[in-house]
Structure formats: structure tokens, C-alpha cells
Image (cartoon, rainbow over all chains, first blue to last red; front, side, top):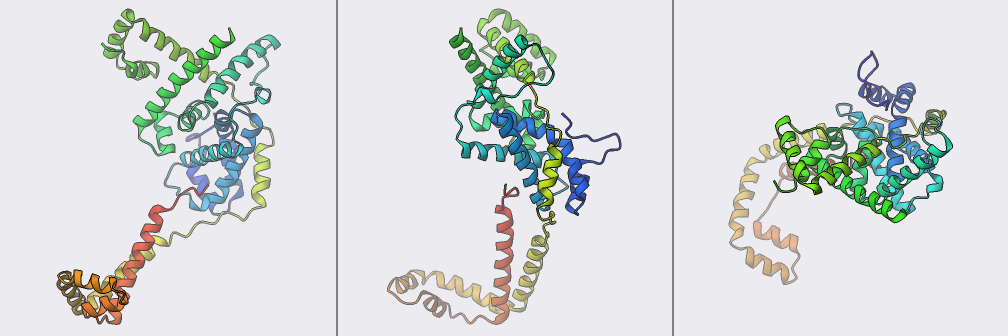
Length: 190
Length: 171
């Protein structure tokens, strides 16, 4: 994940956002490049479909661009951006009303494993994605931020503006639920 | 020890202190249910961490930029609301200071009117115009400074309230 570089002489996200607010298109482009992978994978965890994730991720950046004037650079940029992303994914899901995921649209993973490995991996990952899709929205958002955008508990709490304890509880419940769903899936398919 | 689900979570997340981790391990030696839970959670955590990450298309950023250039450039939202609310509150307070005697008279009349409230209410309910009835009851003769001061304070309050309720994302 390319998110949140802070050192190496790179300008901070907030400095770039300030420049983008002043009309610097290159600064906004840098932010897009910096966060495209994290936002895309966050959307992918939330939606489970590559094409939908790409569409929503683009929409997230466009929304962010349009809303830049309201961003307060004294706050963390990534929290603001991920909050937009979570909200867009939730509203997209509401609109689409997809109750189940179509495994035929699933993403191909990075790298190039053998066809057999790919098939087995594909099946396992599709089962996990289906289990994630079956989670309640508020738990799915926490899972997506944790495992899609690789955020820490503290960063998730800041993004969703919730107490740290709530985040830990939600993630724990989500993981328990996922473990149950995946086991059920395994039992059902055996 | 009862089934310590919270300790298991902290153990999986690497948050458990050494002594507590030892206590948990001792419990795990004796509790098949917790052993099963821990193994399931660790397996799940590994699977979730290993989920495939997708790579943005090569032209993703360019596509976003192309769409963004068709939109109006981001405008820095003027942060006028707090200074304006402060200015209104200050002017309103000054106006009330100028209208000090009227304000005191109004307060006294409000207090005095409390005892006649039921009678006034009956008047209003009886069909009389509520504003004129109230004004007549209070004997209110508000000067411009008093009216202006109250209006300014009310407006300042509205601005503060609106900003407090505003959704910062609007996304």
C-alpha cells in the first residue's frame, strides 16, 4: 500500500491537499497516485467486484476533488478520503442492491500462479469475499479498512469517527462471523 | 477462567502483555473451545491478510485527472461563518448594551408576566392575535437597538447551529 508517505522529502498529504485547494492540479494528481491502490482495494473489499471497485474508486477521487474546498488541512487527509470511500461504497451497494457476489467477476490476483493453484486460490478467495459481502455494513467497512486499506485500529477509529473500543469490538465480531461463515461454506461444499 | 474471547482477540492482534499471554496459554491447554476459537481466528486473519490485492489500471490516475479537468476547479470554501457569527454576536451585544434600560424593562416585564401567563394563554386560545396579545400584555415598546441586538444574536446563533449540523462530506 502506497498510502501515507511522510518522509523521504515527499510533501505531506495535507500540504498537497492545501496546494490542490489553491488550484494546483499536479498536487491533486500526486494524491490520486498515492492513494489509488488503497482506495481501489478498500472498494474491492467492500464491493467484491473489480469493475465496480474501479468505478467507485474513480468516483471517490472525483468527489474528493469536488469537496476539496471543505477539507480542513489541519486534519488527516487519508481519514477524510477513506471516509468518502466508505460512504460511496455503502451508497453504491444500496443502489445496486447486490445481495450476492458474482464470482465470475472476481479479480485475478497479483502475480501469476499455476492454473491449478490459481483455481484453488480463486475458490478460497471467492468464499472469503462472499463471506465479507454477507457481513453487516458497519462490520464490512471495518474489515475493508483493515484488510483493504491496511489501516491500524487507531486510523480506522479516526476515519469512521468512532471510539477505538467500538472498532475493536466490530472487528472481533466480524472475524467471528466470518470464521463461522467460512466454516459453514467448507462444511457445505465437502 | 471463563472463555476469554477478548483476551483471544488481543492475543491474535499481538496486544497482550507477556504475563496475560502466559495466563491465556495456560487456559488454552485446558480449554478445547478456546483453542478452536484461537486457531479459527488465526487462520481467518491469515486468509484475510492474504486476500488478493488488485492493481490499479495503468491509466487510472489519468482517467481521474481527465474527469477532474472537466469540472470546476476546487474552490476553497470561504470560512466566513465563524468570524461573521462572532461579529454578529458582538454587534448584537453592543446593541443590547445601548438598549440596556429597555432590556432590563423587558426582563422585568417578562418576570412579571409569568404570573399572568395563564390569563394570556387563555386570551390567545380565545382567538386573539397572539403577537398583539403578548405585546400588549408585556407592554413592550421595543426600540430599534433592542430589536437589532436580539436579531443579531439570533442570527449568530443560527449560523453556529447550521455549521454544527452540517455534514462535512456531503458525499
